[in-house]
Length: 222
Image 1: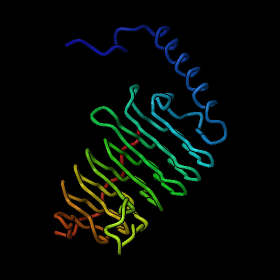
Image 2 (image 1 turned 90 degrees about the vertical axis):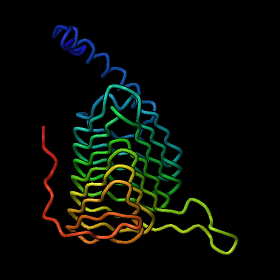
Image 3 (image 1 turned 180 degrees about the vertical axis):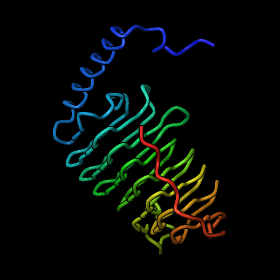
Image 4 (image 1 turned 60 degrees about the vertical axis):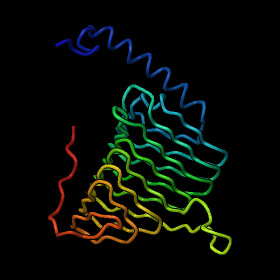
């Protein structure tokens, strides 16, 4: 079985590639000025993201941010919006794209060690995801209706809060105004329309607690 490209290169070649990536990353960061604040230890692969920061928007990325050396992250921060990515966050793009949209004036916070694995998140008001939580393939989080229901019902916006150590399975949809407690597992293809308490397995559309579970493990450190 043939090894990866790194297995076929010597140390000098790998160091040269890394140095070139760092140079390109510095140019990428300079393009956004103070609107993009990135910890020095963040992966230079961030430069392969499609990043749009409108006037007054800001992005803060803390230590040891990770993503693959390929395109796949789409980050749009509207005017006056803010995206804060905690330490050791992994935006994984090997199997699907991540799409984070912060509308004008919106806020999105990803806690430490959060893993997004092909997720879509829209924030018109506020979306908060706690430490050590994981969102699987095709999962979606919306804190707003994104359009009026009818002429008598305007668009509604409600903060979404996802606790710590929450596992969101594949193709799960989480809708506006929902608070999810800590140590929750949500089964594939569930639709979360109401709050979920801590330490439960929830499934269904709408999602309901199926049974109690224990404290979920934190993500392993490298």
